Length: 317
Image (tube, rainbow, N blue to C red; front, top):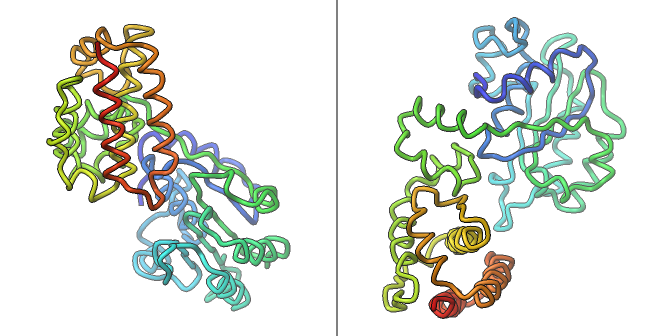
């Protein structure tokens, strides 16, 4: 598993020190390759013929096993949990304890546990994990990933070495999209916080987003009748985020004559910004932020969105 180009410097820093820790907490954005970065490190602890860069060789027997299932590596991902909440259960953590208690398949071999999305641990599961961290067996390593470190118990954080997973620069992200054959998506990078993996993963929504933006461009001439059910039938939070960024650029241009998220539509942003009432715009920003904060909760999406669009039409002179 090769690293992304923007991860190479952080990888060098991580692996140049021979002093190992029994627990690591990898923090970053999934769209920047957080899982790959942590998985590569987990595999490097099992590979017995590391490259000069300390990456797993990919050809030894252990690396071949890692392609399917290695007896010395246990991976937990909340998306595989048997619950609608996708939280990591206490039973999953108890199974990890039993895994560490088993002997390695080879003498002196490392045993590694990799837990993705550690912020989804239930409180009981987190406390059970804490007990493992307090008494780690010899030659055992625990690796956690999270994009929300504040959601973890401070006692868990304090027992881990924190590793920051880097984000690509805009140029690195653009080069990556070009190499992957997605150069046409480059202008949308700001919408996805400069995270090319997120952009590629959500490219099926690009056509819908473009349709919605075309309607936003109409400003006070926006027609509520144009709102289609498919706008709101999917990820409502993503639609609100799109509108939030659109409003932010109008507000930003009003203050600085610059835009951030929609540079490729700067002329549209400029025209709308010049025709807005600043006090009404500020109130709309607050309204959008309020809806965004509850967008993942069971609310009347149609009513909430209609009200935002009515308020949006009214900010223009």
